[in-house]
Image (cartoon, rainbow, N blue to C red):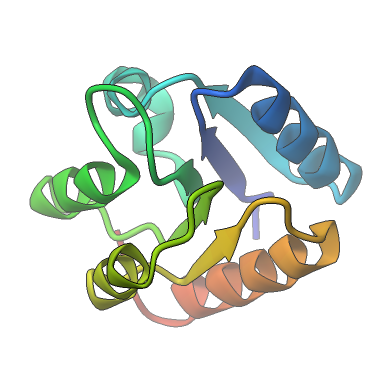
Length: 128
């Protein structure tokens, strides 16, 4: 099986860099994007095995990104991260099919655990 491509979508450059470094240290291929729109226009959309995205971003939110990906037929799992945890948004994300919803700051090991679960579940059945 090829190495999974993880796409990180966050408008905060320091968060993108930290997650990218963490995932690359585990051997993942990582592409980062400053916005949902940038990701949706990228060739990596078709190759992405999992998306880690911020909830609150200018123009298009993480929830909007999830809805747009599903509308286009992409089934890659999404992990949401946010600096503004909110039970209503958390419920919306999970009900829409998010794998997990993490409040910043979060432990790297927690993110890796959810990522491993998302990748295993995605390979096991849910296709793109």
